[in-house]
Amino acid sequence: MKIYPPKGFDMSDATKLQFVTYVEKLTASFARKHAEQQYTKVFDIHAYARVRESMRSQRFVTQMWDENLEYLGQMIGEDSTFILSDERLQFAFNLSAGGAFALREIPYLRGQVNEEALTELLEEPPFPGQTISNDEYQCSETRIHHLTHLMFAQEVMEVPISTLQTTVEFGGGYGSMASLMRKINPNGTHIIVDLPEMNLVQTFFLNNAFESNSVNLVSEANPEIATGKINLVAVDNDKILCGLNGKVDLFLATYSLSEANEFTMDLFEKEYRFLEADYVFYAYRKYANINPRQPQSRELMLTADYSTVFHGASFWTYANENYYQVARRKIDGTE
Image 1: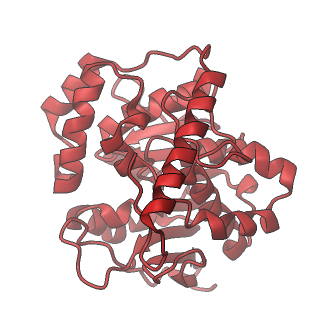
Image 2: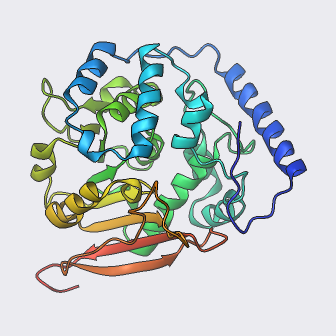
């Protein structure tokens, strides 16, 4: 296991080793506790081969993610159920900050959610390879981080997450954010827009986190969005995305759209216009110098249809590299 403490957070080598040892102990205990859990086999190797052959999504892929997808494809080909425990994919999917952000995020969450609800929300689904870094809540840094995003969004938008009818999440990782949304808003429609390969991973995770009829993988054979479910949509599905314009409460992108290429940023900013969602919640990094592997990591270029609700450094950051940008769509040209 490797950890990457954020700039501005002082962590000695001895403290890093102590943290890694602690996490490994918690993770092993969590795995033993759920050793009898039955997992749904959902990796369709033939479907994956067709995705790679069509390459319709290639224009959305950066060099960094092309490398990750190539490696992910090898694991899918081996039908590996331990994707989350793979060190290379952990770096792509999970937060590994040595507990730094959680030191500020957990006190914030306790001020937003009562303790009983917080315990229920943060507890990780019993998924193989899940990394546990917090003993009290039996969860990962990633889970704490994702719930912080959602609670901050709720606070600044002044709209309860539980009341949102339709949320579109651009870039869903392995499905952690969607699983949290499902707990907070079990009747809402959640749509993950991602690369087809990632949709396969999300299907596997979410089918094991919830009953299988909660998850709808949109495909040529199953082309419709299912209301009240978690829907997984390939980023090149223009028909579905155009059909969502004006029907979305929240467009959510946390460190995903900012890692996309220029083509993708332009598409969602200028053509889709964030699907004309009522609210846009965006998290990104502002680098002192341009990161060649994430050159689009910048603030969103909002159209005149939107007014800014919040734009500034995240409260949990250390070196002012992490930013939130929240906007509200104007109605008839007014706030």
